[in-house]
Image (cartoon, rainbow, N blue to C red; front, side, top):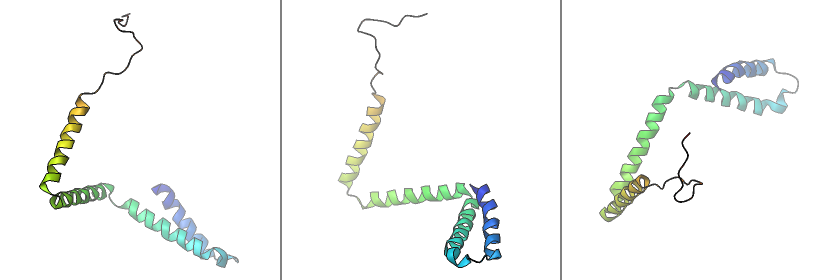
Length: 108
C-alpha cells in the first residue's frame, strides 16, 4: 500500500500542475485525493509498533477506570465468571467420531 501511495502522489501532483482545460470540473476531487494520499502516506511511515502499544495501553487504562468505578460486588461476579469460563475451556468435549460404541479405529 505504501509503495502504491509513493508512486501515486507525484503523479497526482504533476496532473494538478498541468492544469488541463477542464480542471475546474474535478479540482475538488483531485485536491481531496492528493490530501488523502499524503495523509495516508504520512501515517504509514509512522512506526506501527509504537502506535499499537499506545492503543493497547489506552485500552488497559480504560479497563482499569471502569473497574475502579464498579462496585465490589460487581467485581466479584466478574471474576467468578472469568474463572468459570477458564474452567469450561479446560473441560472441552471430545471431538465426535463416526465410530459406534465399542468400535475401535483399525491401526494400519
